[in-house]
Image 1 (tube, rainbow, N blue to C red):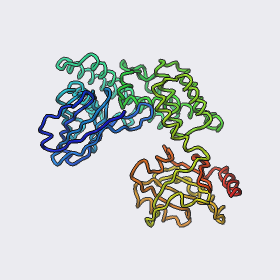
Image 2 (spheres, helix red, strand yellow):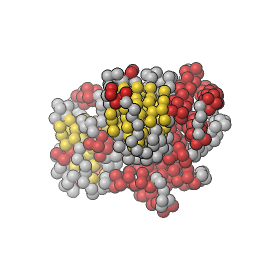
Image 3 (cartoon, helix red, strand yellow):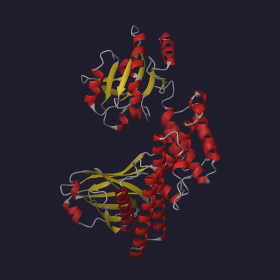
Image 4 (tube, rainbow, N blue to C red):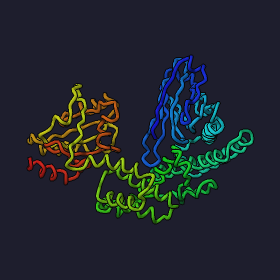
Length: 487
């Protein structure tokens, strides 16, 4: 979504009537005395790619006030973030509201002006959910036993029903707005249940979740299929995108990983995108939901592994089956970024700092084969590979044409320095990400979604692979030896 934020801050503007200047404009007067001089962020998240699209930012003044104006082309659910406080706002072109932002999240945001009816509902519904968590003693993000979780879900449903009945008796909501808020309540609960299903499965891999917690919830489709609501999709409800992601992961991605034959067979693992395609079609979802899940399969696997033969097959199949899909541009965007990282393309240059504070660029090693390890001190699998990495380096220590470059994405500089300096035998090039602009980071340039990530760059500065084998994989030593012979 394209947006043009115009920020006007100051006492005179705050006291004046700040009305939308055209039919696409939205005006928000923010009143947050507990968050003086704090930056406010208004954004949406993509339903398929979960990428943030910033609608506007503004800094509150010394009294905690500001005005944010922006243009939107259609109705949208946006997330409002102020320090530790988060809230969801429903915006339509022409809305003109004041928003009071309390510090405590059990006290709802308070709206007045054009758009207040639906937004006060959303804010109070979120507070009702928080208060249900307080009464039970667990949050939806924690991991109580199934019986306690089911009690939390049902108590939240009961509380929301009581709130809903009282609200619509005293405040006029259009039929379209009432549909939106009911659908949002159901999706938010579904999202919470899917998160629990993920966490419960992770902690209890030997127990099938469905047998432990049958989701007999009237507002939800028995926990088997995500609710489909085209309006929530079109309006970019954040929890709908989250629900799609976690449902996809629980139902398809994780189910494959539970199969011992799949886990032990690299050839089958390479076919993951096509296997999941078949699983989605097997489940006979509604056509629009099937299209959305197939797009999610492409986006998720691209983010995980980039372009592979199986991904290409799934991508071509999607384009053929859905030539006019609304998700085509989202998938194409990620695919085209990965296309720039294919073997033979020039490796995007990046820089980091040494322990002593010197800046070093990847391009400084042109003329040598470079093995890059993107890691962090807090990443268990990354640290577990360090001994194998040191042994591998020792085997090539007399070859000056090979560079082992360890690139940390730690934010805790001292922790990184201590880890590196504590091991004098770890003699590789050690760099730390120092770029604050996202587009300049190694994560952005190399589409790094998770670590560790291993990459190989040849002596001409061209990409060999951005998904190399781990140091503990015997194949890596052979690959390095073969590549060095060509230099």
